[in-house]
Image 1 (tube, protein in one colour):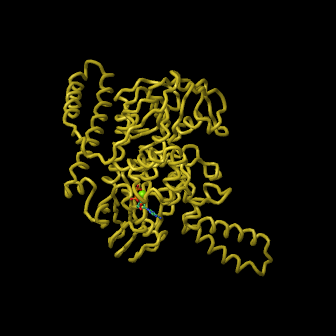
Image 2: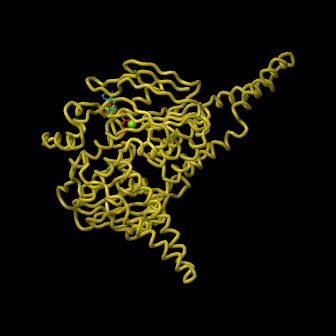
Image 3: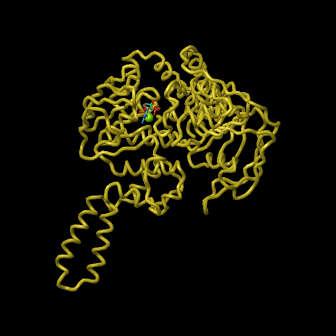
Length: 535
Ligand SMILES: Nc1ncnc2c1ncn2[C@@H]1O[C@H](COP(=O)(O)OP(=O)(O)OP(=O)(O)O)[C@@H](O)[C@H]1O
Ligand SMILES: [Mg+2]
C-alpha cells in the first residue's frame, strides 16, 4: 500500500504542494491529473524518493518502479549494454545468470572434493533463475517489445545504438518486465503511437499491481483507472474522486472538459461508422439501405458535436513570418535511408511549395522522425538528394526537447534567438506564460508542458517561414494544445509536421498528407483522420 501524508513543496516563493495526502491500495489504479505546471511530476518524484519534499512522509510498498516524463534525459544506460541485459537488471536476473554461469565453469574445473558444496550452490543458483522466470524471460521481453511496437529491436542489440524514442520505450519495457507491486508512470503514452498506447492501456487495465499514473490522455484515464487524483493548480491541494475520468467530469461538473470528452468520443464513433460505410460500399446495391442509414447517423453526429466555447483562452499567440521563402520550399529526390541492413524508406520523392501544410503519417518506426531529420540534414541519407528553396528559414521542433540546452535559463535560451530585441523576447515569453521571475528558471527544472511551450516560443521569436514539427503537442494539456493548434492554423508559412493528434491536425488544416513508409502524397481529407489516429 502506498501512503502519502501531508506532503509540502515550494520552489522558492512558489507554493506547489500544500499538505497533499492520499493512498493507493494494492491493485488500485489512480490517475493523477492537473494542468501543465501544477506539480504532478514533482509529486510523483517525491513519491518515488527522487525528490525531497519540504515536509510529510511517503510509505512505499515493497517493490515499485518509476518512469520519468523525461526518460531520454534521465535514464542512465551502461555503455555497450544489450537490450536483454538492460531489461534483466530490473529484477536482478542478469546477476543470477552470471552467478549460474560462473558456478557451472567452476564445477567443470573442480577437484572432486569440492564438488558437493559447489553442487549445492549450483542448486540454489538454479532455483534463483527459476524464481526470476529465467526460462521464459526472453519471450516475455519480446512480447513487451512487440506490444509497444519497438520495430526491429532484438534482444542482442546494443542499447546505445537505439533511437531516442526507442530508448524511451525500452525503459518502459524494463519497468513492465519488473512487474513491481506499484507502478509510478509519468505520461507514458507520450511517445507511443495509438496502437502501442492501446496495448499499454489494456496491459495496465489487467495489471495485478497498483498504479499511479500521470496522463493527459483522456482515453487512458477512462479505461485503466478507478480513482482520479486532481492536483488543483490554485489551491495546490489534491482532490480525490472515485471512478473513471468521465465520472470525475460528471461529478465535478467540469463542463469544458466534459464537452471536450464528448466531442472526442463522437469523433471516434464517426470515424468508425465511416470505415464501415466505406466497406459496405464495396457490396454495391445489396447494402445500400444500411449505408444510407449509417451516413445519416454520421451526419447527425457531426451536427450534434459540441462546439467548444472560443473565449476560454489563456494564451493567444500568432506565428509571424519575417520574410517569405521562394515558391519551392523543399524538394526530395529518390530519398532512401537504412540503418545497417534495415531499410527505413526508399525512393521517396516529393515537392513542397510555399504555404503548403504537410502532415506525415505512419506507424511508429515507419521513419517519420528519420525523414524529418534527413530533410534537415541532421541524419545522413543513404541515397537521394534534398534541395532547400531560396530564403528558407527553418524552425524545427524536435521530439524529446533535443533543441533545448538544459543548463540555460529560460530567458537566456530565448534571448539567444533574438539578442537585439530583449523587449520582444520578454513579451513573447509572457505570452507563453513565462512571467516575472519564471524567466530565470533553469530549463532542466521546467515541467514537460513548460519545456514544450518554451521550444515553441523560441520558434515564434525566430519568425521562420518553414516549420518542421515533430509531435509538437505531446506534454501539452488539452487547453494549450488547442491554442497552439489554432496559432499554427493561422500561420502563413509552410508547415511539415508529424503528429497523431487528430484535433491538432484539424486546427492546422493540412493541405496534404505524406504516407510513410511508402512516401505517397495524398490530398488531405477528413476520411484520413482514422489513419492519423492509428499512426
Ligand atoms: N527546481 C525547480 N525550481 C523552480 N521551479 C521548479 C523546479 N522544478 C519544478 N519547478 C516548477 O514547478 C512547477 C511544477 O512542475 P512539475 O514538473 O511538477 O509540473 P507538472 O504538473 O508535471 O506539469 P506538466 O503537465 O507540464 O508535466 C512547474 O511550474 C515547474 O516549472
Ligand atoms: Mg509533468
